[in-house]
Each structure stands twice: as structure tokens, then as C-alpha cells.
Length: 285
Ligand SMILES: Nc1ncnc2c1ncn2[C@@H]1O[C@H](COP(=O)(O)OP(=O)(O)O)[C@@H](O)[C@H]1O
Ligand SMILES: [Mg+2]
Image (cartoon, rainbow, N blue to C red):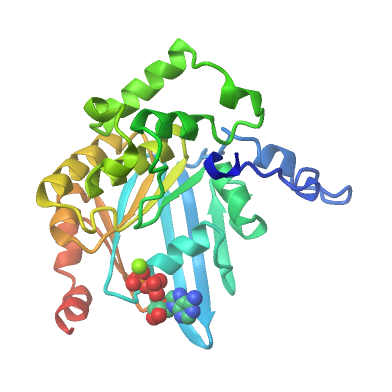
């Protein structure tokens, strides 16, 4: 059974549920309730002065960044700029040496484990698709929808018509309606990527991080992925790290440029493209 629990349901340790008796401000029981995220100031993610060192080398160097709820943010930067490390910090995989990281108004990411952060609503798509190759496309979405539900019974329960509708809608969104009964392992590379994005979306993340989502895709698949992201913008908060400049130009609203672990420019695509430091960093290589 463990092979298809996705992601594995893990109980929040009790010490994170109840604030200490002498702790006047924190209220962890509220914080970890699924479906609740306080974005009263319109900010879904807030990083301030984050630094991460590996053996004295600063992969992130006082990185500051804020993502608004519903935003589609592109993060670009040369190899080694710290893009993946930034995602590792947000998802709790890497602990920052210093700095502040908040999810919504109240969730201090530094206090939570990777699993807890995923459960709080931060979804992450890695480069390599992690789908269930031997299950059909439909089953993959079904399992993703039911994963995270605490009651094991729901995994075996028949789908309600509402749940069927949700899966049908997702199939349409990720353009896999015609392939719903195909075994996922037989999909093209691009289709697998879309399926995984669909699986992440079935869990209704409050923030979705995508690391190089169009790497290895054909031009046509890249084009369709751009359309998909533009459809998601506004309804979902997305952070897209990507090397493919043509793709970034298609979807970009606000772009953040990282270099040597810091933000060197931020704004509209035309703005960052004309920034002398950005030009130097890209052309200097
Ligand atoms: N676990 C690690 N141990 C040592 N160095 C690392 C580790 N992870 C990343 N780095 C280094 O940190 C820098 C930033 O890496 P990364 O975040 O992967 O950059 P990007 O995704 O922008 O290409 C690179 O120089 C990389 O070699
Ligand atoms: Mg990377």
C-alpha cells in the first residue's frame, strides 16, 4: 500500500499541534489545519535575507523575495545561481543558516519538516516526473486526489460524482482527456509532466513550485505548457524556475533574476532584459 500513497500521510507530531503553555503568540493547531492559509496581506510567500552555505560556499546570499497570492513568478539565472537551493529552502529540504521564511502570514517555514510543509500546501514539481507508471492517467489523478486524506477508507471508497467531475476537469486542463485510460508509463515526456502537474493540483496546493518544467519538451509541448500556466495564473500561486528564455518570455509577468545566491533584478521581462547587471551576467559567460 505504501507504494501508492502519494505523498505519504504522516501525522503532525503533537508538539507542533499545541503551543506551549507559556507561549503567548503561537497557535500551531491553527497553523497546520489543511486548507487554511492566512494571506490577509496578499503575500503567499515571504523570504527575507536567506543565506545558505555549503562548506563555506554561499549558495544563497541574503536572498529576499515576496510572492503575491495568485501570482505567476518566473525565476531565472545562470547555472549555480541558487534557484534549486531556494526551492529546497522553501520546501524544508534545506535549512537556511539565517533569514526569515514565511508561508502566508503565520507559517514560519523554518519550524516545519518537509512533510509538514507539503501538507500545509506547498507543492513541488521536480524535473523528473514522479507518476505511477503502471496506473492509468485517470487512476493517477484519483490517487493524488485521495492522498493526504487521513481516513484510509476513502482510498477504497467509490468516487462520488463530484470527485469524477473534478478529475474530468483536471484531465481537460492538462489536455489528457483522450488518454485517461492509458497507462501513464506510455505517455510522452511532456504528457507525463502535465500529468504530474495535474496530480499536484488535485491536492489544491496554496503555492506550487516548478523547477525547469519544460526541460526536454518538444516545441509543441512547450507551447502547450505555456498555455497551461497562463490558465493557472490568477487561480494559483506559481513559482517557475526555467532556463528556456523563449518560454519565460511567453508566460512572464514579473521576473526575478538570481545570481550568486542573490536577487540582482526584478520586474517585467523588458525591464530585467535591459538591466546592465543582467546583461553582464548572461553575456559574460
Ligand atoms: N548539497 C549541496 N552541497 C554542496 N554544494 C551545493 C549543494 N547544493 C547546491 N550546491 C551548490 O550551490 C550552488 C547553487 O546551486 P543550485 O541551487 O542547484 O543552482 P541552480 O539551480 O540555480 O543552477 C551551486 O554552486 C551548487 O554547486
Ligand atoms: Mg537548478
